[in-house]
Length: 405
Image 1: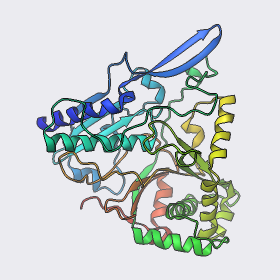
Image 2: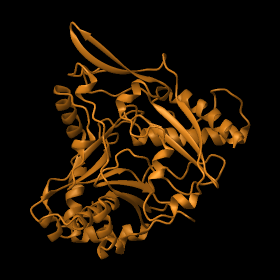
Image 3: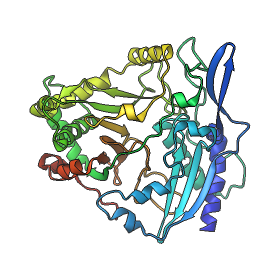
Image 4: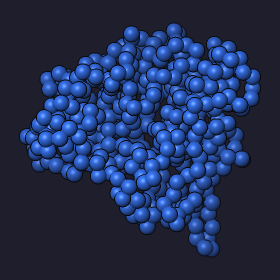
């Protein structure tokens, strides 16, 4: 274990040479005349990223055998219940390596002001790549390890804007909200590539547009949206919608490269529909609404949103984003999660911590076997999860996630 920890720290240090903002710290600069309130990353006066070693007397089976994701998983992440503003006093990146009785859990916490999911997994993939290269080639402590994808740190701003944004605040208490998750059940459902293909074929067949434009993930999202709405037993006149986290990189003109390190993530939403209408219509109808929400997110829409935000900057609040009638699809099964290896072979599972655990949040993971399979971590009230487990239409497409391969 001591040897593994040394190798992890060595490769992490080399990785941070390329991803240096993660070793920085948030700093707020305020002036009264003229009034200004700006936040930036200081990469010089900082204590760097954090690396923690912990032990826990439980087995991998203790974590992966229960039907629901056990709350103990939250303890594997150092930034438990932190908010972004805590990056003024906490590290922007913290790695916690927890030694179990028969395995190791590597928990990576990153401040969301520094980067989005694409940036997070680009960092993680590069760390794995450098770890492999330093072991295979016996490289010493230097920063010349070649990597396949170099992060791009030139932050993108709309024309005539940036790099510092003046926020309309005088004190952090005006925008900090400590999010508390309600009582939830968190369960992971598996969807095979074959099952998803059937949903996609059905959605496109039923769609009024008679097109093949509805994607696999849009079809799966619509299936989950309808199933969760049924499981919640919402009144027929209750308004519901489906939101999706979406990357703006490819939607801007010209597009931002995949290696762009920063936040290019956004949230799009279908229009609001009554629960009665959503369940009365078929999968194709719902999937088309999801497709339109995604398709409308083009360069013009992205720039318009930013223009409106710059007129009246607001700070993102989880309590406003989630509501008990909405389904939010977050993360992406396209991220390379199981391609990361640290000298112990392929990971047996990918799990997440406390962040974003709210009623209706659905986190998408790459399926263990790859090939287009997807695991969905669904957070709902205990009654709604029980109803979902008994929903024949939902379970016909899903299966129980089995990580104990």
